[in-house]
Image 1 (tube, rainbow, N blue to C red):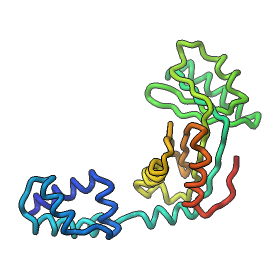
Image 2 (cartoon, rainbow, N blue to C red; image 1 turned 180 degrees about the vertical axis):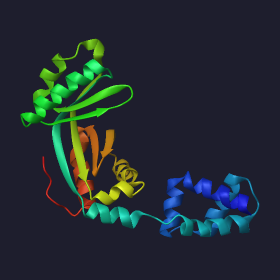
Image 3 (cartoon, rainbow, N blue to C red; image 1 turned 60 degrees about the horizontal axis):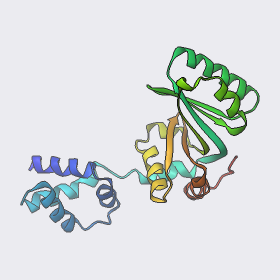
Image 4 (tube, helix red, strand yellow; image 1 turned 90 degrees about the vertical axis):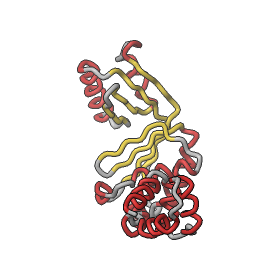
Length: 216
């Protein structure tokens, strides 16, 4: 019995659609049990059904908490952005530090994320030519333009709210919005995407939030 219960839990935890339907109480338990019997190759209908019924109690849905946090959030939208990724080295990091200081100090838009393979610089179109000149071609891993940046600024509770970034990301994906990069720091969740998706993304996320002022 315990083994069946564990296998059902593992399956549901690896299949978000089934898990969400179950947690929301909109799934037919018997139909799901018969489906899982085939997937798990077992004939123990009673054990599978019992495990399904216990799952929401042990793994309650966080959707209500997500919606509460989003209702207290605001968004910022920035267009005409470019993305330059350079090799991760001490020399390049020093250059990036100076670039950040210059652009931020002059009121420009810049964001820097350091990964294991490269340093990502997200900058406004106006400052892009000067930034590109600072790195020789062999130090540039990738360059993309015509991008936009959507920032969701939420209450600090999201630091302890597991799955919050995935929840927003899933909604964007369902609405046909392809995200190029995503980063989450402190209480900001930042989505970088092709500019053609931005208007739709703003509309989708605005519906989730309280509709507070959008900066751009």
